[in-house]
Image (cartoon, rainbow, N blue to C red; front, side, top):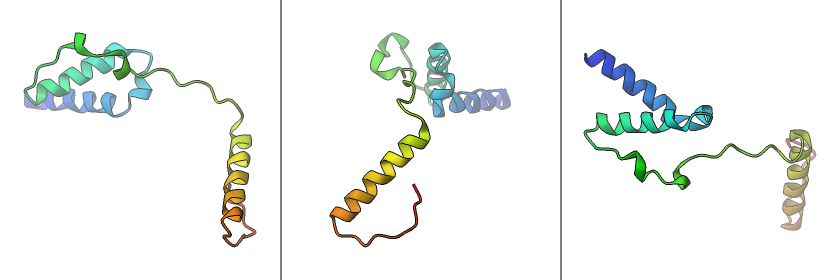
Length: 93
């Protein structure tokens, strides 16, 4: 019985550790959280779970990643130049 219990806890830990992968089913996250608390001997009342504890689906990126990296890279280089840091010719971002 202990082996089965460990498998349940490992599965619950996997869900709780990466909630973004299970965003389509919040009840799965709630059940995993309850299983982890139960394993530690604590009670769990799902009705106490507030909306701020639930994770919303992230919004789509406002611009393509290449544009974001270029914009951020330019901003970092501008800030470094304004602070007087020596400019190097390599462009990591």
